[in-house]
Image 1 (cartoon, rainbow, N blue to C red):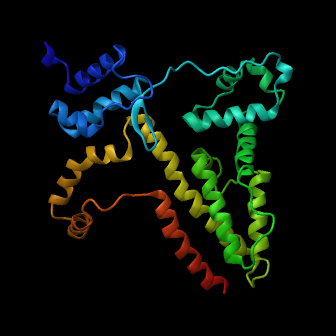
Image 2 (image 1 turned 135 degrees about the vertical axis):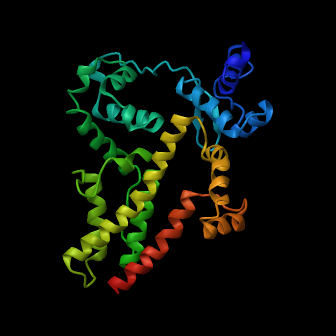
Image 3 (image 1 turned 30 degrees about the horizontal axis):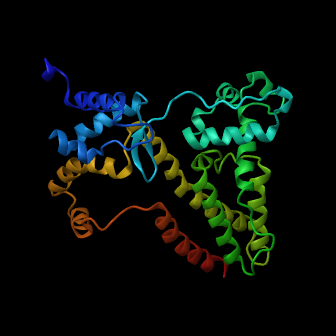
Amino acid sequence: MADAVPPHARIAADIKRRIADGRLRPGERVPSTRQLARDWNVALATAAKALTLLAREGVVVAEPRVGTVVAESRTPKLRPASHEHDLTRERIVRAAVEIADEDGLEELTMRGLATRLGVATMSLYRHVGGKDDLVMLMVGAVIGDFPLPQEAPEGWRAAMEIAARTQWAVYRAHPWVAGTTSLTRPMPSPALLEHAEWAMRALAGTSLDPVTKMHVHTLLFSYVQGMAANLELERRARAHTGMTADEWMDAQYPALLGLTASGRHPAFTRLIEELGDDFDLDLDLLFEFGLTPLLDGLEKVIG
């Protein structure tokens, strides 16, 4: 009868038993995909499927730079306000930022926010107009935590580089911010306008026409935002699969070998063989790698 239970379900059930009897406690790391595959003598994909099942059930969560750990209690954090008149817009915004940082912006609801603050949902609307208004206030708050210098350095390049690195720092701390605005429908945020003002001042002494100035600012902004979008995508993937990026790659390795063995991609196959275990995709390094040549290219345009 045991054979009727799929291997990944047996693995998941074993981890649940370890949690139930206290061998694995909340916050402790569970065996990795590779370790489970070795211990149970199954394929990496099967081990990954077990962790995915546990993640979907809320038993485990993926923690950045840690791995998959036993989930804490899912009971919402309550911060009761003794009186609703103690509620302020700042408290609401900061609590909303915490939810977005922990679970992603898609999990932020006015009802869940009210629960965290220990107030009635309708009381929030005395301070914010709705979720769209709240998100704009959240963006303003976190950008305000990483202010641009009061004095800009000399030269457009140094100033634009500061803006890019400041923007990256915001996204690094709060990955959800990258998905809150688009190039075609920019958010009317005073905090974002500060960055646009900084860029226009930096380019004021150049010979660029107004359209090109806007293109330069938009290009640099979208480069940082585009890179940062992968931070949030990775957070969502970890929450959905229960695997770190390394564990996911391990699970995909057999399929990758099958593709390279086909002989239809010789250049890519050769590259994979040359890289060996020496390549680790680091978004911070990739951001640095791309920023310098981008500024070099703009220097040829600006002069």
